[in-house]
Length: 389
Ligand SMILES: *Cc1c(COP(=O)(O)O)cnc(C)c1O
Image 1 (tube, rainbow, N blue to C red):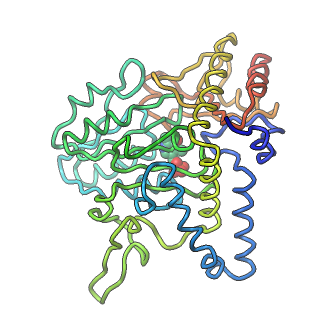
Image 2: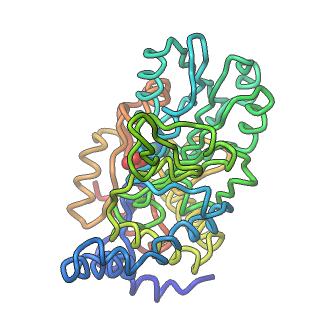
Image 3: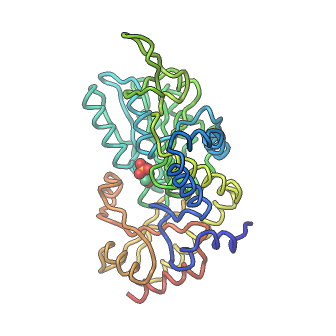
C-alpha cells in the first residue's frame, strides 16, 4: 500500500475538486511543479544554457528513470515533446514502398491513423484495420490471417483514449514477429497506470506522453526503441543533435536513439517529467495499478446502478478509463453539469477513435479516469451528482 494522505497533501487540488481526468491531463504532484518552477527561475538568473549545464546529470537521469519504469536501458529512450511526435518520428522512419501493408487496430488513435494514411498515400502502401473480437480487444485470429510478408508494421494502441479496454500487446508482438513485421505500441493510456515492460511485451517501439497517467508536465513524451532498430532507421527530419555536419557534402547520423531527438527542448519540463517518473516509482507501479483498478471498478459498478447510464467499456482486461453515456443528455452537457459541481470529467469524441466509435454507433462518450489520488468517497460524490441530473 501507499500513503494516500501524503499523496493527497502533495496534490492540493485533489481535495478541492473531484478530479477524474488523468487520461486527459492529470494533476501533477507538488514536487513536479516545484522542479519545473525552480528551473524556470534559474533560467531567469543565469540563462537557459548555464541553467541546463548545471542539471546535466539530472537530465540524463530522466531517461534512467523512464528505463526503470518500462524495463529498458536509458540508451533505448528518446525524449520528445509529445507522444504523437514520438510515434510519428518512429513511424515515418520505417522504410515503406508500394504494396507494403500497414496494420492498425480498430481503436486506433486519430493522429496515428492520419499519419499512416498520409504515408500510405505517399508511397503506395495500404492501411488495413485488424478487427476487434467480441470482447472488444484486437482479434488475434483475424490478425494472424492478415499477416504475411507484405506487412511492415503493426500499430497497436495498448489502451484506447475512449474507454477502459487493454489490448494484448505481447500476443500481437509474437504474431507480428513471425512475419517479420515491426510492432509499434501506443502506450499513452497505459504508461503510469499499468505495469508496462518492453522486454516482457516484446514490442519494437513504444510511444508515451508525460501529462496523462504519469502526472508529468504538458509538452513531454518519449519513444522507446529496440536497441538494434535505433541504429538502422533514419528519421525524416534531422538537426545538429540527431546528426553531425561533417563536410560540405556530408552529415553523419547519431549512432544511437538520440537520432530521434532534436537539440532544443523545454528543459524545465524534462526535469519535471523525471520527477514525475521518480514519484511514481516511489509509490510503486503495482500499487498504482491496483489502486486505479479498484477505483475504476468501483465507479463502473456504481454507474451501472444509476438509471439512464450506460457504461461502455470494452475488453476482458480493463484500464482506469470509465466511459459512459446518459440517456437524454449530450456527453458535453454531462461534462458541463459535473464541472459546475466541481467534478472534472472529459468527453471523448468520435473523431479521436473513428473506427471503433463508428462501429458502435457512438458519437461521443463521457470519460472519467480516476487516478490513485482520488478517494472512493469522491467517486460516490460524482455518482450522486450524476443521479441528481
Ligand atoms: C493522448 C493520446 C495520444 C496522444 O498523446 P499526445 O501527447 O497528445 O501526443 C496518443 N494515443 C492515445 C491512445 C492517446 O490517448
